[in-house]
Image (cartoon, rainbow, N blue to C red; front, side, top):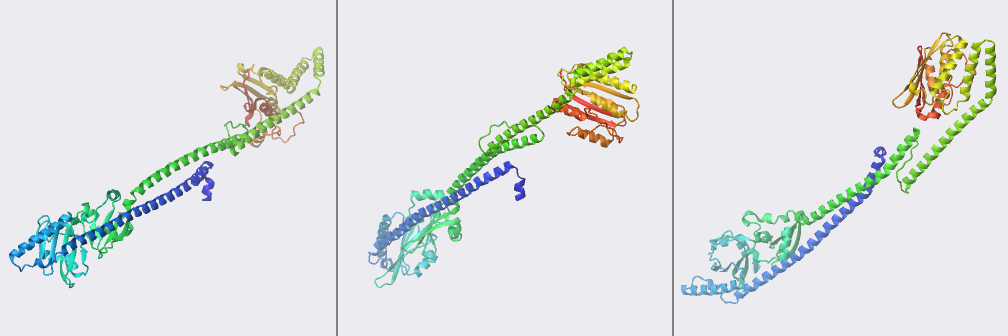
Length: 595
């Protein structure tokens, strides 16, 4: 990880650090808020559900109390069970049925939810009345599990689990719940029972608030008896599910998987029934999912904003650093470029300002050093020139030339004339309007002198573009090169040497002069030494590998020419040795064209 971090660029580090510092707290705070919202919603739903559950338990207690009072109203009639006997005369039986009919009709009038009423004595004699005119199958009734169970228990009041009406001759698939009461005599002996069939929906009345919450969160209400038998199911009672298509085990699925449901339970005081209000957690968190989506969108949006801000911030900072880095590399290559961007007053801005100040100081110091070097060289040259009195020198040479003419020695007179001309060129080397043609004339004078001395051993060829003959050029540029060609190219063998000077003007308006000889060249090692000397401050004499020592003349060497070119023309001025071998040496001089 350390190596990966070290290999990252500054922009990536800034973006990564800024993003982590901002995004991690944002994500953590969002998760905490999400958890708090979830917990708060669950607590609120639990509180709301508890209110519903308590209200339903209270309603069930009221339901049992109401039907306890209804059935008690039947018991005020003496002989309620005795009048069910079938061994009495027919007239008495008809009279009794009318009596029971009037009593049951009055009971049903008191509660319109009652579907049917059965009054049965211990011998199995019964009276049955149904709103739809259905007939009771007594045998099937007594075979019902719930009927057998209630006969065995000791409680006076009971409410049966949900069951079908198969003991009637019609509508056997109808689901009902039966409220019952056992009837005892004064001696406490069991005498019979009263059964009232009711639709499950009549047990409790669901409020509009509950219905709204049920539709939104799929809330279910289940009421079971003390033995776990299902008495009421809100989905079944409302018709959302069909009893024939679903079994009781599926209706009570929350008992098997309690972790998937929020269940609030209450127990009624009457009959010990258990009221369970059930909310599937998957439905309950539908509202939480909205909060989750909003939170995720908010976090993503803020993360994008943070990343974009970090990129823009780091881009500006790194851009200045890269500018500073690039300028430093340019500074290494000798180019002094200032950073012109607008910077602030922070640390990076101060660093850029300090760098610009440093570059300006360095450039000024280098300029100072160059000027000091030029002044020093000029002072040395002026000191040398002042050692020679020009008037005395030229007057003396003119006297010698006239003396030679008077004595009839024209060759000596010509030599003195050419020597005086060369000296005049040297002493006037700072002339501003010196031209290429003047430098060529100086070369011709020099070669004529050498040919007089050494019996015409030098042949000069010129191929100069006429356009550049009138161009300005610094003085004493070709003569040192020609001197080296003659001095070191023919010194050992004494054979004639040919020197060729060419001059061309390039498309870039550069004058390129080539000085070529056909004398002895240099060894590869010596050539490398001489080339290296042109880039250093130390003068390396251009000589052949003869082992002979050079005389202590004060000649202007190739190094001096290269340095003067750089001082005069900068990077546009150049002297280089193109080649040097057994076929001779080729030197190239490049200077800008100036009319």
